[in-house]
Length: 278
Image (cartoon, rainbow, N blue to C red):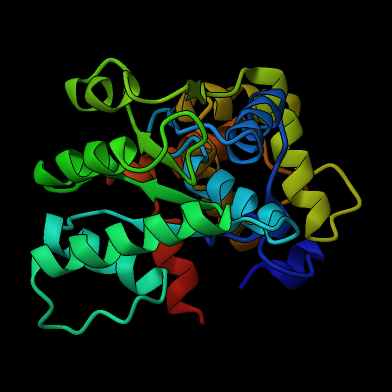
């Protein structure tokens, strides 16, 4: 909607998991290096934590892309809301073990056991990237623990990366004591927030400064350094700037955008005005 006005090739702050927009901050660079270490050095697993919106899922997707160049097989599974049976069915399906919709839990485990035995015999490896483990049913944790115990413990053919929002939660602790590494993503500081925004803008063809210094500070304060929140605020701010024909975005526009996100009443509903004019 506002791309032509700002001379963007595409919206810079959409929430799609687009690898092109992956911003390798020092935090994300270190996390990715540790994840690659787990994958390449035959580690049993890692617990990957960080507040919601800090980029765990996108980092896993980047890891999966990088491992396409390796001999290892890497599969991503989102456990959000899954039961144990649904989770194991997804694992079997991703590994192309041919589970039917009616395959019972014991048969799923048997298929996985046979598959893992085959990996040991052929000295092959699989890396499972299990996202949103803390938002799955509790029995999924027991299945993950069982998988971590499977096979040769000295030279595991199966490595598992699990994501949680909080390393200190009981759920994460149950898995972390069986894993080799704990990896954490923290929110951005002000400098990293500014670099992140500039990176997103440049990826969308922006050749000039759009946000003022005080806007960056307001974004940092409002979004608390969380990339997902930064995207949301910046997207609405650019929409408001388009509606008001602004040359740049300052802190007042950011404050108004934040009010829109919170649903607080404002003197003028800018988003509604823009949508009515479409």
